[in-house]
Image 1 (cartoon, rainbow, N blue to C red):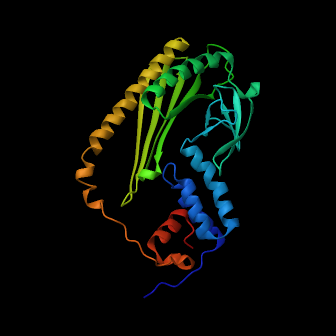
Image 2: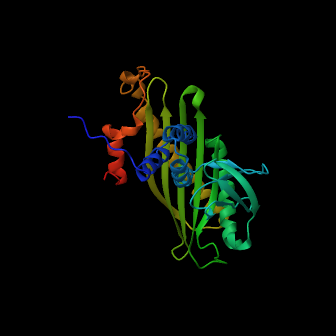
Image 3: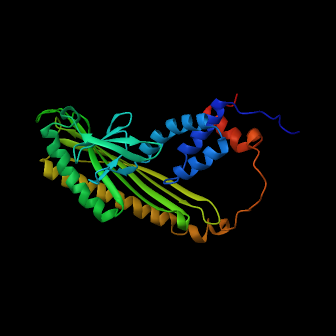
Length: 303
C-alpha cells in the first residue's frame, strides 16, 4: 500500500536543510548549500537554515579564513569566539568579523586589553604557540594552528591554575579529483600549579570524502591523555609539543595500518558507476523515502 502523501511544512524543511548542511563533508558545504537553495526554492527557509547551520559547521570544522589585510589567517572556533561573529587571533592581537554563510572575513580591529590574556599567561601561551608553529609547519604544510587561554586568562602570576587550548586544523580539498580531506585536533592543557603538573587531553578527528564513481567517506575520531611536569614557559612548551607530536604521529600510523588494505578488500566491490537518469525527484512528497523519514526521526520532527 502506498504511503499517504504529506507536504512538508516550513519548519520541517528548515530542519532537514540544516541537517544536510551540518553533515556536509569537509570543504563541501558551499556546494551543498547551492543545491539546497535550488531544491528548496524558498529564500526564507534557506536563509533561516543557513544562518543557523553555517556558524555551527564552521566552528566544528575549525575552518580558517584569511584576514582582510593579508596579515595571516584566523581560525573559527568556539575557543576564540568573542561575540556572535567576532573571533580573536591572539598571535596578532586582532579581532576578525566573520560572515559565516559566505565564509569570509569582512573586517578586523585591534583587540581590547580585556580581550587578551595577562602578561603572565602570555608568556606560556606565546612559548607554546611558537613550538606549535614549528610542529605544524613540519607535519601539516597546509595547516594552521593557534593557542588560546580558555580559563584563567587574568591570572597575574604564580599560584593559580589556568588552561590553554591548542587547535590544529588542516584541509586538502581537490574537487577536480573528486576528493577532499581534513585534519582537526584540539588539545586542552590544564596547568595545575598547586600540584606542579600539566594534564593534557587531546581530541583528534580525520575526515575524508572520495566520490569518483561512488561515495566513500571516512570519519575517524580518537581521544588521548598525557601529563608532564609544570616548568618554565619555554620548557613547558617543548614538553607539550613533544606530547602532541608523539600522539598525533602514533594515531596516523594506526590509521595507515588499519586502512592500508581497504582498496583491495572492502572498497574493491564499491567501484562501480552510479546510474544517471532524467527522472525528476518528487520533492513535494519526500516522506515516501526512508532517508527523509530517518532524518525527521533524528531531528524529532516526524510528527
